[in-house]
Amino acid sequence: MRLNSMRLGRANLDRLPPAIRRPAYDRSRITPGIVHLGLGAFHRAHQAVVIDDCLAAGAAAWGIVGASLRSPDTRDALAPQDHLYTLAVRAAEGTEHRVIGALLGSLVARENPARLVDRMADPAIRIVSLTVTEKGYCHMPQTGDLDERHPDVVHDLNNFDAPRSAPGFIVAALARRRAQGLAPFTVLCCDNLAANGHTVQRIVTQFAALRSKDLGKWIADTATFPSTMVDRIVPETLQADRDEVSAALGLHDAWPVMTEPFTQWVVEDRFAAGRPDLAATGVELVTDVKPFELMKLRLLNASHSALAYLGYLAGYETIADTMTDPHFARLAAQVMEEAAVTLTMPSGTDLAAYRASLLKRFANPALHHRTWQIAMDGSQKLPQRLLGAMQDRLRNDLPIETHALAVAGWMRYVAATDEQGRAIDVRDPLAGEFAALAREAGPVAERLAPALLGVEKVFGPLGAEPRLRAAVTTALGRLYADGARRAVETHVSH
Figure 1 (cartoon, rainbow, N blue to C red):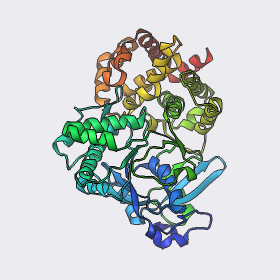
Figure 2 (cartoon, one colour; figure 1 turned 180 degrees about the vertical axis):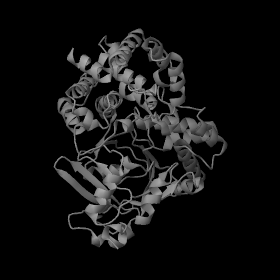
Figure 3 (tube, rainbow, N blue to C red; figure 1 turned 30 degrees about the vertical axis):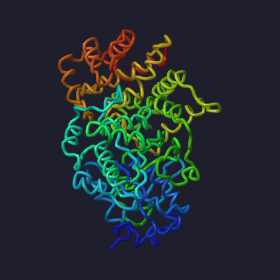
Figure 4 (tube, rainbow, N blue to C red; figure 1 turned 90 degrees about the horizontal axis):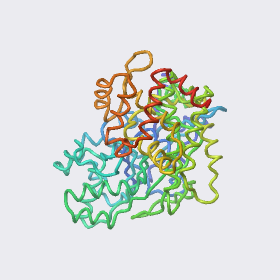
């Protein structure tokens, strides 16, 4: 048997090469204190790494049980290797490998929702954290309110003990704890939502009040929902990545995660039932996360989305590829320049240095972050990433042409046909609605832009703003006439 055909697991950690970091604690002594909903690559490259550091420092009661709301893929990959996996930190200088042990087990919610509710209701669980992406909250991004007509919400209200959605699971578990006289857990959102803690609190309490006004009030009065800002670039794991990691380990790892050296986590220090010593591992504990959250959404995420849509249309596969084109690199810088004036940061924050670091991170040639991956779920992302800054700039009579080009890039993308006439695989909760509007309007900016701006769930009343409509329509017309590459070059040259 070849060594790298053996599976990574606790029984063979001693086979790892000396250069490979491994859990610096006895996993058999670790007990779970966190349930994490949304067991994807980002969580495993970000929050789980922080908790791994906390466990190494002696916080033995803070292990993680992960839950995938739908797909069993992550569970099926990690369970045979005792939920150990490799973090591969890639930089231009090389790759560092580290085996993470903070994840103690995993559940698949769709297979047995009652089991997940039971686990979340366990008094040992003091934090329920989430990375379910913007669409996982079953809300209306423009208002931040629960979408009561969402199919999963309708299902959960009629199947309270067998939910499908993240809000449904949280409310079912909190209701169980209340009925048993137990304290609530902290709900720790780690997704890119505006004022994410406050938004999730509103969504959860609105859902709970539909079941019982008393339950909604109890959750509002006793549970805590700290706001957070998370930052780390985590591309999807490809087969080539698995092969590279397995070769480095001498053992097969079915699902490692790839990431960059940079990582940041800013957390509002408001926990209902305690927390590990996050500050000792580099987490920034603050009283107000909002300035940092807006900084990240409007500088990093907005420019990332602009590069994703326009870069994809121009034929670039990854963000790093896109950044090799100096015009696209300048576009990213201009998105940040437009957004920076809408931010009010605490004293001592160096926005110029942060923007420079983002451009360097985007250009990291070791990260293969696909434009198509970042382009997913744009209907959920645009309000937080682009539209908020546009609204602030319009309020102050400032131009919005760079952001308008990014929004036009999204429109051209969700029309689902690329510049060569090939179909685009658009992954978005509203993809069907966008496709229908695009078919009716045709590739005519003066028809397509107003049609998409009229989608209330994305643009709300901002879609009727005359200056925004004019700027986006002009930009979309340029994309249809000249193509993305030429349109970007023309824009940044003026």
